[in-house]
Length: 193
Image 1 (cartoon, rainbow, N blue to C red):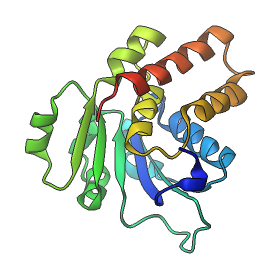
Image 2 (image 1 turned 60 degrees about the vertical axis):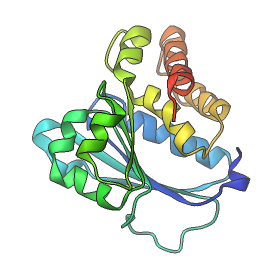
Image 3 (image 1 turned 180 degrees about the vertical axis):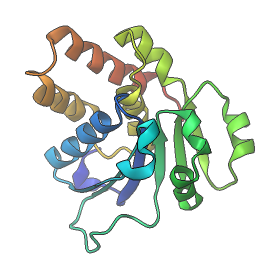
Image 4 (image 1 turned 30 degrees about the horizontal axis):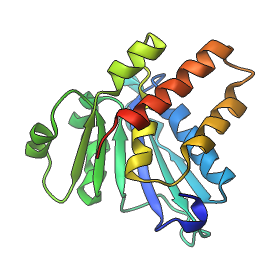
């Protein structure tokens, strides 16, 4: 799907601990959206809990210019890189108006449904396992980004890959660059709705 035919505007947030891929995944997604002609807005809420290095980055992606430039009041969904953050009310409260939650966890969808009330659709996905296998560490951000593209198909997977190569070609060695792209593809291929 190209952004010229975006069915609607999307607002969501990524959250996790610092240095696990929150910023990287969000940056890559919004840059890919820009490449495909979308409008984007980012809001960085690092203030949530500096002691634990929790990060929340809010994003809006639209096929038309924004009339409201404030942080979204209602979110389509959220991507949690760390399931332990579900205990933080400042991070979890925005989910009360969300449609979906993509959570890096081994917990089943049935178990998650007991925690969250309808109509929130929960998508558990063990992105850490894939990240550890391909990148030899727990950096689940790009794996979850691959899964996210099935929930909200705002950009093409190939555009994300092009953006990764463009942003990181001078910062990452070729082997690390390719491992991250493989992890992204595995997230896309292994995630099921």
